[in-house]
Length: 587
Picture (cartoon, rainbow, N blue to C red):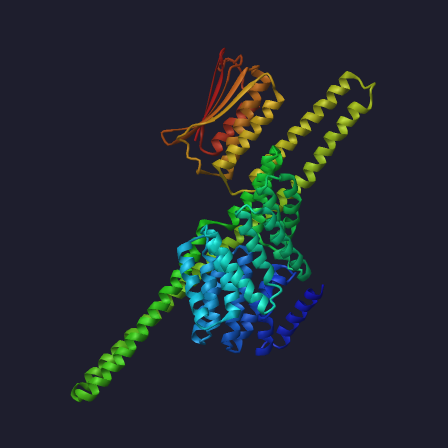
């Protein structure tokens, strides 16, 4: 509560004293990780600080505010925005000759690229580390050593990672950095877990969690709960891991820490899969996929790399321009001393060169403005997509948690009626059983609808999991029928269907299998997905009694299948004989 009141006071200070350098600096010194307020409010706070610094031309204040914005966006998983703000801070620090800030942000730029280009990340991190070590900047080195240890850990150099974590920890203890120390303990615990020293890993994670609870460092607390769950997972103690991940999940969602939220969903899906709880595993896998699609797109990583290249290129071009100007001035001085007669010609050359430089700078500025416009447009599109995805997730959670729970309550109530009254008639009992079965089927169809709502696109992996889950339920419903689900080797498992395509393919398979179970009295039902002549083919066959396609009037089920095929530009063929029925979908 105290931190929330403090933040309100800070906003009031910005409004009342927006022109004060002291006020701007005090806001920039706020420790982001310990603020227990929504991330959007934190972003608004530092964006306002940027604007205040720019109004009074306070370069250091604006650079520090850009730095804080970069850190907040990184926690949200918005790496493009994070990199963009780092790129704004770096040239200002270099111009102001702030060696400590420059070294720290060079290293931070490398750290943000660790999953996209590890070699480049290590290079930039080493460059920042070298500058900090040469100038004995302990305050900067405490974070650089810790982050450099993370890169070593990613590169499987575990002993080296521990070495740098301990170097960072030594400095933090020296300066009594009680907020930063738990980060080192967590990182060290992670290395111990990779070395399968689970007891020591748990000891260090608990030390970190205890300290973070004192400081109410919600992001760090969420990370520690997840990490403790990972230790139990590594020991194959699935049940003990579940409550720890569930303690982390609401914190990461509330703090908009999307990377951790996505990872928590993946862990829960994997755990329930190990426990053979297919419904829960599928549900959490769908939540993981939805977050993954909205956060970790390949395009975002490519844009981060492009921003970094743009910064490096601009820096080199400016250096070349400065060198050219210096050479031109020296050449002019020599010409004036030795060849006064050619002075007018030399002056003309200098004027031409200056004109060229001005023209080049203006051209470069125009290109940068164009890139900024394109970037703003792309960011607006991404933000719109994120909001739409969040709305879909909210609706799907409401359907799953509210409507699904109510339908389950109806089934339970019907079963209680059937077994609670012994003198109930057979006809009424059958009627209640029919209502219970219909409600159960409604739940499955509701989950299918939630699955489709969560996605703009459906991967082959998602579709395969959904079909397999449906066939598993069909097996349980009909013990006399043998089921087979096959996917040919020539099928591209990375293919992505639109939401409409994926849902209609699944519904056609579902309707075909249900028809075989209800009307064909089939001993075997087989579903095969293959690829022939650049066409995907889905074939559903049974060994049932079949029917005469020329004389038999097709029911609503077959008409609905043909309509769904037409909606996605596919063709549907139905063949039937006394040996069975075959339905072939080509798309």
